[in-house]
Structure formats: structure tokens, C-alpha cells
Length: 265
Image (cartoon, rainbow, N blue to C red):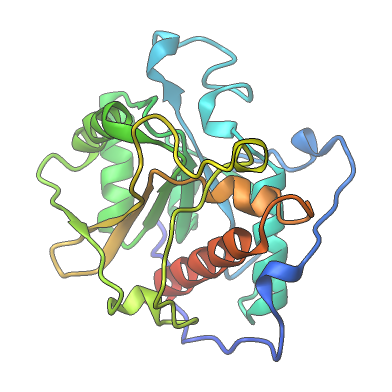
């Protein structure tokens, strides 16, 4: 198994504002960006976690494969973020998007993995052990787009399969992860695109955003939890004039801080 690489802190490119980018792409990129392993040598790989949704009975094609919950907003949200990463940092990331399959050893090539709709995820014992080993060997997991009390309980049921003794903590504004690249001293709820038509920032009973984390035994954040929010939509809709820039701007700054933290800790 490969050791995850670490790099030094990375300077920001001059005078660029994240929230002002208009990322527009043509159709047909689902097949184009669907990979099970790194295909281009790269310092950083943007990686989306593939999992089986619990309501799929553990085996249904279309729930583990591309139409599954794990692929929500993919690939546009991920690709928009990868473009921002290339423009706003000096992290060497020429690789296209990658899909992290827990049944494949390529997962140990990825220093950072993003997962969504994690209230539906479930794992086999082998998959849970693989994700457990990935995290404790230095990997970083960011979870996003789940809302309310029931979603939290379902998310934690899956998380306990991976880290049975994990302690979840609320992150503070002064935590290093919010100052490793940008100084982020104000955080607020980041809504889905539903906000455009409703003005509502929450879903279900997830009225309050939760910025949380699980740390390794040595204190390193290894799971960053964005609960009662939808950062993926904020990236995906950053080029829409109807979606407020303040949400997409914060969402980009958050993820770039998380990536930089993952690459330096």
C-alpha cells in the first residue's frame, strides 16, 4: 500500500476571488470523468467516494453504479472545484476526476475523498475495514449534503461501521483547518439550489449548520463533516446569477482549506 504524500503549505495565486468564477461545461462528461483509479501522475487527486446506498438492498446496479446517491451533482460540482483548486493554489493537480472504490487498492493513492448523501451509505465489512485503514494511514474524508436528525443518525450508523469508537466534535472558528489557506472567521448555512426559488437555507429539520469533525488518535482531522448544508450545489451553481455569490464563495474557501489541510497534515 502506498503512503499518502504530504506537501508544504501552498501560496494562493494573487488577487483572485473564488466566488466570481463562472464555470461552464458542455454535456457528456459523466463518462469522460468516470475513473476507478488515478490515470495521470498528480500531487493531488480529486476523488468522489462510491458506495452502495442502504435502500438498494446492498447490490442493486444503479444505486452503487452511476445513478446511486454517491454520484449526486457529479461531475459538474467536482469539476468546478477542481478548476478552482488549479486556479487558486499551486497544488499540482493535472489528473481528471477520480472515483474512489473501496474494493480497489487505488483508494490509497488519494489523499482526500469527498462523499455526499451519506445518510444513505452502507458498507460491507471489507469496505468498512478498507475505509478505516485509509483514514488511519493518513487519508482525509469530507462528507456533505445530508440534513436533519434522521439523516444524522443514518450517517453515524455507517460511520460507526468504519470507526466504531469515533468521537464527533464541533469545530471552532480558531481551529487550524479554518486558517491553513484562507482565514475563515465567519461560517453560515450553505443551501442547495432550492434556495433560489424558496429563500430557504435548510432542509428537513436541519435548521442549524453543523461544522464537525472526527480526529485521529494524534489529533489530526481525518473526517470533516458538513451537516445541514449542501456545498456541492454551491459549487455546481456558482455560475448561476440566481444563486448568491456569498454561498458559493464560502463553499469554495471551505473546500480549498480542507484540501490544503489534508495535504499538509
